[in-house]
Amino acid sequence: MTIRLVLAFVIAFAAAYAAGRIVIPILVKMKVGQSIKEIGPTWHLNKQGTPTMGGVIFIAGLFVALVVMGIPAIVRGDLTHAFLFLFALVYGAIGFVDDYCKLKKKENTGLSGWQKLALQVVAAVLFVLAMRLTGIAHSELYVPFFQVTVSIPVPVYYVFAVFVIVGCVNAVNLTDGVDGLATGVSLPVTLFYTVMAALWGYETQGIFAAALTGGLAAFLCFNFHPAKVFMGDTGSLFLGGAVCALAFAFNMPLILIPLGIVYICEALSDIIQVGYFKLSHGKRVFRMAPIHHHFEMGGWSEYKVFAVFTAVSLVFAVISWLGVRGRF
Image (cartoon, rainbow, N blue to C red; front, side, top):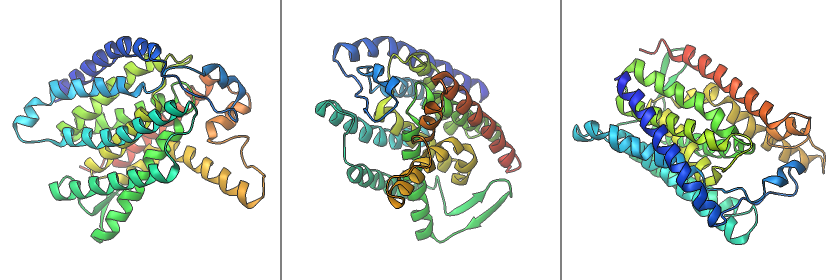
């Protein structure tokens, strides 16, 4: 199976890299440029007009790899990888609509917060129901590090799952604020899933994870500072959906706590900043939120933010492996 996962990675990388060579010039020609908020770091203003919606590049790479490497599983009737892709694609579609609205308005504001939240909750509810009905996921909650499984009432599980999915998807979205950051931080996460699949024999989940890793690696060639393209909400919401879907497909959503620690810190910093600002009538905890901007405002270069945050993600991916290695 390991060879199949390697092939999935290689095919996705090659397809995504080829897609990038084709898609980026098209986006430039169509003037699908990112609008930069004036309240952000002033040096980000020179990114104005950089093509966005680039998430279609690694989505395309993932799709090609799934079609090529997923055929034997489909013949057997195992559609898990297709199911994971479809779920992530729904979130990618929400992001696409948001990106389109931003471009149409020519400003960095697309769908309203309530509109996005409503669509994401509906998608999460449908996903959880489908996972339960197909038997891919169940309400027995595996607890990493303690190697125990806890049974919880089905209604409680539904609420928990929807909360985790919507929270994680938006946390990944917030992480996408510096060239290559969401891509770099997510690579150790998807690599973790790939390794776990290889060790535990989860073939279809492994093909999906390996292909996503390959697609992201190729996308980073274009997204690294100075970025030639941004993934946009199209890519970041798809990526968040994929990261969540894999956690539930492995029946260990709680692993997202250590594995997604960077995402969590990004989201918490934003929540703390907004909450404290309102309670204190204008005071701030961070120089700017999410937290990657706090470090930027403190003098860190985009290279340093990318390197440190990606390294932290890698360290916690290893810690996550230590927490689940005794599962089987």
